[in-house]
Amino acid sequence: MASWADVTRRLVAVASGRRPADLVIRNGRWVNVSSGEILPGTDVAILGDRIAYCGPDAGPAIGPDTHVIDAAGRYLVPGLLDAHVHIESSMLTPTEFARAVLPRGTTGVFADPHEIANVLGLRGVKLFLDEAHGLPLKVFLQVPSCVPAVRGLDTPGAEIGPAEVDEALAWPGVIGLGEVMDYRGVVAGEEEVHAKIAAALRAGKVVGGHYASPDLGRPFHAYAAGGPADCHEGTRAADAVARVRQGMRAILRQGSAWRDLAEGLRAVTELGLNPRHVLLATDDRDAETLLGKGHMDDVVRIAIAAGVAPVVAIAMATLNTAEHFGVDRDVGAIAPGRIADLLIVSDLERFTVDTVVASGRVVAEGGALRVRFPPFPYPDWAQGTVRLARPLSPADCAIRAPVDEGEVEVRVIELVEHQAPTREGRVRLPVWDGQVEVGPGVARVAVVERHQGSGRIGQGLLVGLGLEPGCAVASTVAHDSHHLLIVGTDPAAMAQAGNTVAEAGGGIGVVRGQQVLAFLPLPIAGILSEREAAEVAAGLAAVRGALHGCGVRLADALMTLSLLALPVIPALRVTDRGLVDVERGEIVSLFV
Image 1 (cartoon, rainbow, N blue to C red):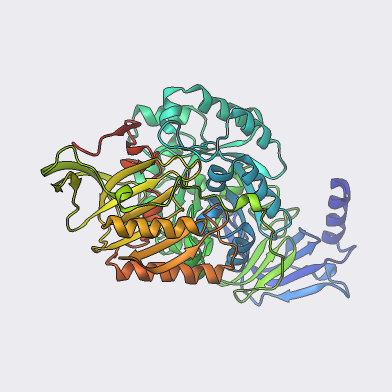
Image 2 (image 1 turned 90 degrees about the vertical axis):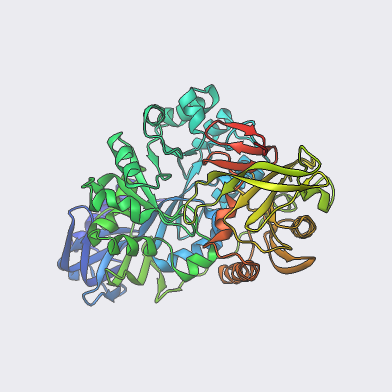
């Protein structure tokens, strides 16, 4: 490996015209996110994986073996960076995720692999790190801080404590500490949570934030004092303003289901917030969304359509993110010395990506990959992770009432379309022979512990899904502990759906009666497919079609349902231990 002195001497030689470049892109419009300008008539000369020259004439750097691309007046844009993403939410391996997002212009992601960590522990994180090594997509990993998400409210599949965090922060490719979701623990001064934050601060690494409460009073100020340097959980313009005022970065997300970007951008377009500390992210996008709508290119398009100047929107998805994580000497801008991650874009407002260069190589053109990289072999221990005490019966999915007959008042989870938070509602339901009977518009929720085979099942009720009688959906994608989540209107159908998923070692299945309408297998940790993105997207489309046939009209219902068991986002959640009041941080009775 060449020393830095050798690298800089060679770059200087190319910029001076004494040495030919490997690649020269001519006659482009340089989107300069550092100066906020668009500079026409720009050439870029690249040697190896780094940029040597950006200016009006790279002719002296062109030799007989130099590959020359004529940009023909098109825009030269830095490779896009996703400030916060869980690759696992795509249900793809990092390799297949890279294949899906590189042609869209994403050249780097800041990923928190706490989904696979909640199933496989620290070795799951190492597995992702090993797979990411050598990919054209730069994967900057954050050590998961909350495995489990919060202690005592569910049964974790694995645990990562302060010692494990300290160890992993020293691994090459680890950029910081993942989102600190246990905001109640931070505010309460809990020793273990602060020990993890302290490990990252000692290592000089960025601490990711996750403040899901709408309360911007003392608890929020206390959370900001605890060390988290960013937050992506805001759903209002006021949330973005509050975070930036406290010295944090406001990360605005646009995922498959969480569509907070337009509202968050009002902080910039209407309230005048300085955009330098505003970053863009996807957080959670599944394979169908990635292939259909795109990745960070889609997020940039939406930002521009919302009234953000194109150069500013691009900076939010490049330089702002690189500076926040301390890697702006390598990525985030087209400039001498930086890694040659850049895009040729024909239409800036529509953000049409024609060519993608990553580490000095053309990796995609016209939306298609130009490079090949082999699949990553997953070990046996990463599969076969769904362990139930026994096959489920309809009785496991029934809800016992405190009375034999009559009516009961119950707490219900009210789903909020396009947002992660839920609301708490109250309804009265009939009781027959000691069991709660669900009425129109109400669905049952069962969360079955699947890591230890304990047989523990938590119960809840929800409204806002629209599931018809006799239907059920089961999934082992249930953030963050990824137990077996079953939602349905009929206990027999729920048991059938749950057993179908469990027997396959994980996945998502939809059942009407005893008939399996659609099933997507996810054998790796019960949350990932080994298949290509197009196959996974087709499987997701079939599952969504089956849900639609069962009456579900909620947009991105699968992603919304996947958060039902996450006890760190208000208001109500269900885990294998029961119904959780997130703001109170405790298990509460289903019955009022």
